[in-house]
Amino acid sequence: MLKLKLLFEVLLLLIVVALGATFVLSNPTVVPLDFLFIEFGLPVGTIVAVTFVFSGLLGYAVRWPTTLRLRVLSNQKDKKVQKLEQELEKLKNESIKV
Image 1 (cartoon, rainbow, N blue to C red):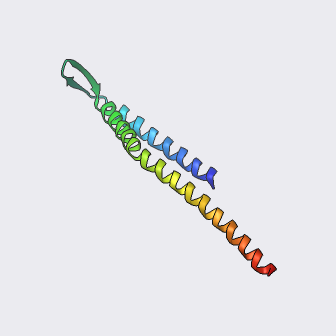
Image 2 (tube, helix red, strand yellow; image 1 turned 90 degrees about the vertical axis):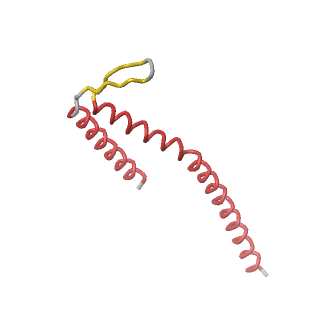
Image 3 (cartoon, rainbow, N blue to C red; image 1 turned 60 degrees about the vertical axis):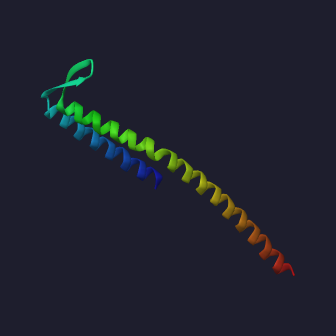
């Protein structure tokens, strides 16, 4: 199942990259950009694609600490459940002996 999920994610990524490349190549109009002392021009497709990628990375960076914390909490809970299940099994075995 994990391999299927990975395959799906890779295919989805390839589709997004292909669509992004098509978009960039379909919009070659150069737009001038002026950032204080720096002036340059980039194609519209490139600007949109870079903005899309930057926004995705920013969203991932904002979400990452929460995901990490939840993963740690989940692992702690799993260990506690496993310990309690072992203790329950031990108590069941003791009650059968009596």
